[in-house]
Image (cartoon, rainbow, N blue to C red):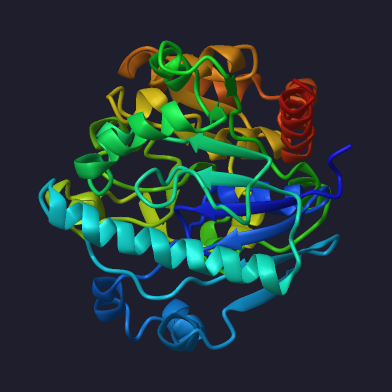
Length: 406
């Protein structure tokens, strides 16, 4: 049995950032089975300068600078996990490949490794799994003479070559990680096929949903969000997620707004202000961009939607995506209209309108509104129920048990 093992989880995200993605949801579920230590992505000197007045940094500034109270014990409601803040790192991404980069990055590895070893000593960790969540540049594999993990796990969530920040040094780092780590998880079929020849011990581990959380809002009578109180009976077409020209097809969004002037198109998520000007999004009368909203409020917004959208570009970035929002839309029982941007969408074709071109996308929105009924809503929820973080955590336990048994 491995229930009493500890999980040291080093993430490319930070605990209190606005959009931590799937890592926090996965962690909360893991914390039911393991004692979890969440190692935050370290702040570099450059991060410190840029974010000096940010709320997130103010909360952890003394931990970053002076190692003062670097541990934050978090109560998830059903378990606890410990957030560990490493010390200050050096900015290295701007450096060319070579000896200087290797020396600086070696120092950053030592900073994170030291934070992990300190946590191991403080909390008397003896039997643990090391999980690197898509950060192959810093400490992709944990190796120590005195503190050896039972298994090193690396999780691929994106194609590293499409990342502006990680691609410069990340591609070579990931290749080395794939060679050295024990177990690789991938969140999309594209990545599975891409990596298959490089790593045999690899498993498909797609995004999922916190179903009980979304159910609690879906089954409750609640007031509309304050910024959608005055829309009356107007039907809402909604997208939740990162709003950017590298991710979304703005021409398609404009076509949706123009073809359905009687509906309100609502976008929720972090956006690039440059896009508003370049694509004149602020001039579309029935388009509202609400900006970022707390994750806890997303179900209340989705409840207002008549149709949910995934208007992704069909490009190199999105082909390896398995959107977190997809199962969240389905968990709310909402019709979903999506472009055919990824092979993963085929698994949802029975409950999602997957469009191959603009005309198909527009027609699917109309069909989604006409055809929606209680039976279809139940079918969508049932699909989401087979893609929960609880199921993913059980799958992970089985993978670890199988590996250790060998």
